[in-house]
Every structure is written in C-alpha cells, then in structure tokens.
Amino acid sequence: MGRMVMLLTDGLCTKSYDQFVERYSNPGDEPDETARNARTSRFQMRFSPSCWYEATASLPEKAQPSIFIEGGGDDCGVFISVRIPADANVPSVP
Image (cartoon, rainbow, N blue to C red; front, side):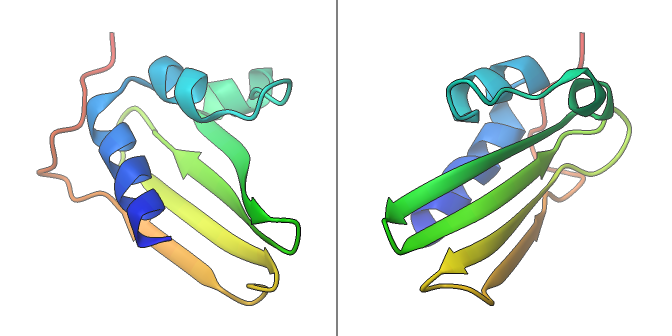
C-alpha cells in the first residue's frame, strides 16, 4: 500500500487533472461533470477479492492536492489521508 500512496502522490505532483483521471480512473467509471468541476476523482484499488481500497483524489486549482484512501473488506477501518505540500512540484493548470 505504501507504494500505491507514493505512486498516487507522484501522479498528483506531475500530472494535470485530466492526465491523472486518464491514468487512475477505473474503466467505465470516469468522473462525471460534477466531479470534474470539483476536480476530484474517485476510484477503487482492488488487491484481492477480500481486500480493496476506495480512493478519492482532489486536485483543486488553488488549494492543496490531497488523497483520501479508505480500506474495505479485510482492511476495513484503514484510513489514509495524504496532503501534498504546497512546495511540491504540482503542475500548473492550463
């Protein structure tokens, strides 16, 4: 899970919102217009039939990017919150 957090954090720092969504959205479950306007993306990371995580990434235009990950199944009760530091290499918004 630590590697996934680092991979997602790197994605938030190096990709635009659209690039992040393209790379990390579950096929067929891309963000709707409301989520796109809010610049959020929700997706599931499944490690086994009994272990998965629901993730929400937020890439606001003028605020700190963040990821919230909540465990399900065997990892129910696990909650990971990551806020990207303001001095990270966050891409500029076109």
